[in-house]
Length: 317
Length: 281
Image (tube, rainbow over all chains, first blue to last red; front, side, top):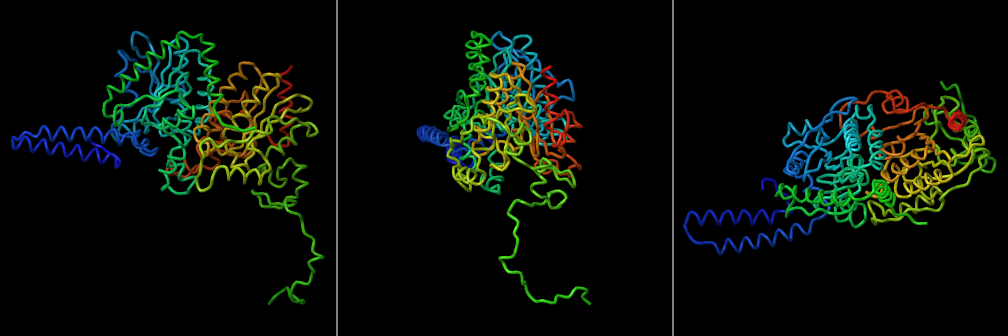
């Protein structure tokens, strides 16, 4: 593990210790199996403890881990074949949202997701996963294509927000997201949504209306990032931990508040510890859900989708 | 040296003789700074008669401007916000709500009503900026959703008057989902082929722009209104450049193709009535 967080220090310390004992054992040819075993048991216990007591802010940190898998990596691991499609047919091809037809388990699925970059250059190329209006319009174009050929849609959400730029405003960022919300709520094919990293506000929701919406265990989803929330409500960037708690943005809280349909368990410590296993879990979920949803009448499915979102909100009378 | 010489020292008018203007009778136009008399404002539909600046007004004023003889039935009046997250920043959310109930006399940042515009039925939902910055939380979403249901049930056109800073942070993801909820309901309204007019007034930003405000069969606005997704300050910080003059004004948004027209508030009722007639005949 190259990058670890402060709260992971007990784990990192033990790993270092085990490494050292192993080196000593090799050098001195002494049998230290017992010590190593003892330390490894301790490591497992420590891991279990650390990762079961994560605060909102910890989850935000893990969701942004630079080694977490991103959309195209997931698609590659999930699909047997994949054809990426580009462009919104109006302005340009947005690099922060990718999509195309893929096959898994013998069926064709339209995959759409936010894409972040793996290194500094690629992060800029992908605009840090912040889409412009043409990204949302490309997504809608692909969803309409899927609808036309009766293929289900799977979206992977991972964005720090829709891009707040000058051209984005000129080209109607608000309208682009709004249009997606309306069209997705009545799309005539099943839609599955997975928050695989950051789920920030309208930028996430813009491809997030589905029959099933899931969050991976160590992700967050809310109306605003904890940093921005802190700067607006506390007028300082220093309250991000507190803001993360207040916003109830973890998968667990979102599920408790009935704003998502389920939580997908990640490999211990996060998806970046075992991307292949994570992809396998997501794949299994997609296959199982599509099997169920495909059996339902599409009108009923759309009605249930609309009713689900319309039931969200807490008011008194 | 002085061309004016004070002959009597001190203020000699007794307090009893002073004439005080009650609060709110006069106020200043925020644009040209000239004093405006309240009665004149009402008569001029809250538009400054010196510089044509459209003053920010709420549901009470819009209802009186639009509905025939100011007659309407208020809908879903008593819906108030819950506090699902027990939210607390520098203040408890529940305290903030209480303060706003007292300050504004409103139950949340929106009111809905059924009335007539030149004898044509219409359902109007209008946002109030004075209530926590016109922010959209569960109540705003719920009232819009129910207004749309009402429109569909009675086959009456729907007018949404937006005026909001965006989603309400104190309801976090619940606020976010109101975007999904209102847009889904609008899809049903559209399917029922009932006209939906979206009037975007100063200011309309954030999650409101990114949901119901931009989804009208026609999107219209008033002169000079601020309309955008991201706020100007955020954009300026992101691109690290000054923003062009007139950026994110209604005129700018019209020019870029996201509004159908801009209407002077004094002609608003008439233009709406014409559109409603066209849809009917």
